[in-house]
Length: 214
Ligand code: GAR
Image (cartoon, rainbow, N blue to C red):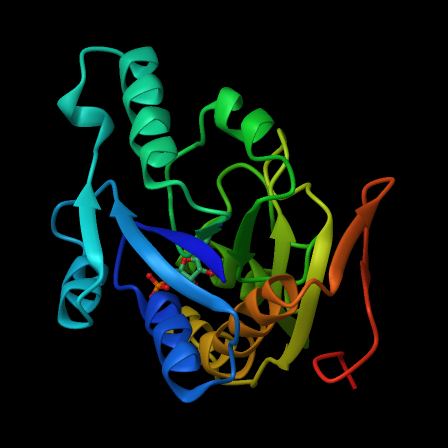
């Protein structure tokens, strides 16, 4: 059974999609051990508590320096003894030490088709504002492993979503969540939990079978 830590900063709709997929059996062999937020007001914390999942808050604001936060954060995470760390809208830059210790054991959901509209400064609504400003007709979401760069790690799954002519950043964000994020994030977790994902030379291979992309 793969033990998950889900890291959040906001509403937690991706966390909800993971909880629902575990409840419905579309994710197998995995359970959420802990939800960690940097934001004490994140609604995601309520979602966790409602489901009886341990919910913790640890914020850089509680510490005198970034180094002190990084150390405390990593100690807290290590104490949870999880197998996979899931970034579900977590907007804090991860400590480098954590990326090293959890190589290919941290995944992130990004609301665009990487390598478009990603990297430093591209998060949340800003991604959709940029997509609309460029006039793309297709956007989507990406689940990838986390490495030292911003949105540069090995890509696990992607799903495209059409942009509508009258989209606002908010309507596009919602459609990308519904049609892509809430689908591929649970799916990636299920694939990893069932041993179907491997990384070689920075590229992901997904084993064919019950859970494979069709
Ligand atoms: C999601 O759209 C996620 O893709 C995005 O933040 C939102 C969190 O929503 N993440 C990033 O932009 C990371 N670069 P949620 O709290 O409702 O899951």
